[in-house]
Length: 340
Image (cartoon, rainbow, N blue to C red; front, side, top):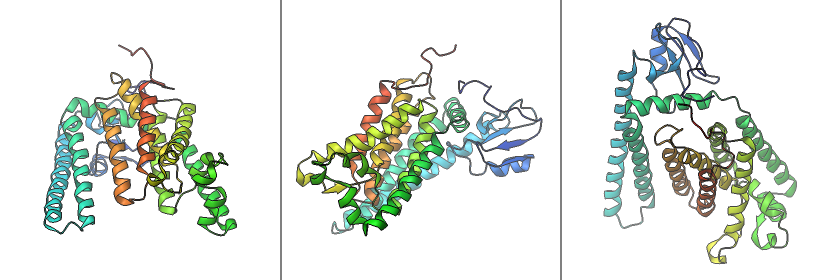
């Protein structure tokens, strides 16, 4: 069903009501609706109906509140942009005046700059244009309302490999011994190529696993609305395995002895979704593909800021791989002929 159609939106009951799909709160009454919209942002799938509405719809599409909400969202995004930019400038000045050893200040400068770029981009390209804002809000709600098993499958998969690592690690006598026995250790993988498949499933710790889990669930939910599940699974596996293999082909001085984590697959799925949206730009909301790609690129940089040992080579190759396959429309569910 096309996201521009009214058919995917539930019917209203003739009163003020709201619903945050797919499993969020529901409520009735004008006061409760206003409370639910206090923290409204561009990626909030909340649906709202007024007494005059035939269906629940994204809040910015309800005529009685469109312009007020747009004005408030624009102020919100502009405030975040200018605050982040101010922090970036202040920290950059502080770093320039230091002896060059204040690396945390430099990281704050980069982080704040990226934050300002992302929120400024969304405000300029989407929020400030009422038509773009309406289309993006409708599309986001449509994604959340898709009936797909991709999200629970992704969550279940990550839970399974997390539990598996816990059990194997305990039986092996610790993390390092587990990696030597089963992980992607490049010197050993030359003789035991199965490690290229199994090795990326191991993570360096709970934060590493939790971060990849959260991002994979997000990427799976987004891509499942655009592509077939089999294609998403294939691209995830390619993204997890191929960049890890290519990383080992670098000169020994440029790569670590071992690596783990499925982040290459996660970034491949994000890139895949962005590539499909860019390829089918007439079907997708304005600028949506670029926003996904910029978001994923920023994630790559932020992962390095949070942990300099994170493998940016794998992240970038995964993103490029997914983006390329998305641009050639592999497994896309988007109709080749758009309805007029």
